[in-house]
Image (tube, rainbow, N blue to C red; front, side, top):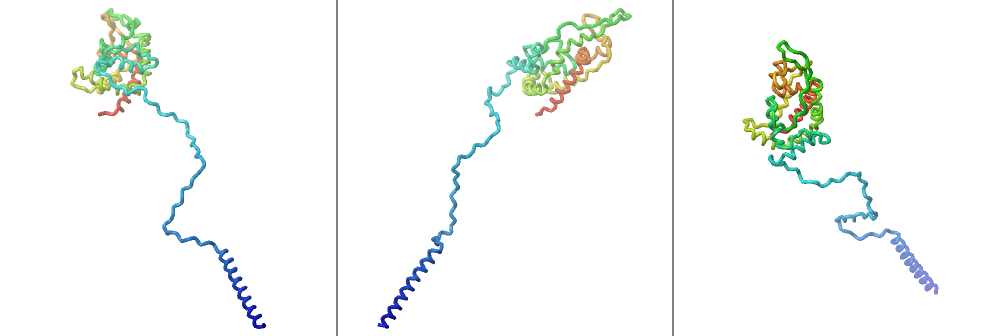
Length: 278
């Protein structure tokens, strides 16, 4: 009986040890982190982050959008069909179209070319001018009677004032716009210049020479004396009378007007000299 009891106790202890061992290993394994299965060595790209919120629209400064061209690019008219456009362009150089009363409507390009050609030699065109003549006769004042009985006159201030409006309009011309129009019309100006049959076909050189002629007009101090041997007045000073016609015109318009014209011509000349050349 005693032996049976001992065997029973030993068996009981073995069962208890087995049970305890199973429990201990189960608790230990549950506490361990789960080992992930082996993966490939090739890195897996992370999925792109998706922003579920709507993106904000940027605040842009107000900028006008480019407008579509209203008209097609302007084309240069043929010389024989150029009168209206050429005259309109010249008139556009003055405020409120004030030049309209001065610019003739026919053969505009050819007449301006002829004027430049004549002025390049220091002379004036007696007729077929591209602008209307100044209204009214020359105004003078009696000064004295010479020993030979000839009367001597002087140009009056009123005569100088006859040119004030024309000179003012010329001085107010937009020089930059004038040069742009000159560039635009130059092929037709050159064509009309070629029609004159001159050996020198460089119209631009003629323009610069005409400007230089006007700038070379002398400045006269004191009253301008005149005589009238026939219908027309002449300078009493023979040196003045022998000067080119353009120089005499610069004297007749008066010193103040001549100074304004020369100032404007210098400005135009400087801009013309900056034009690109072939």
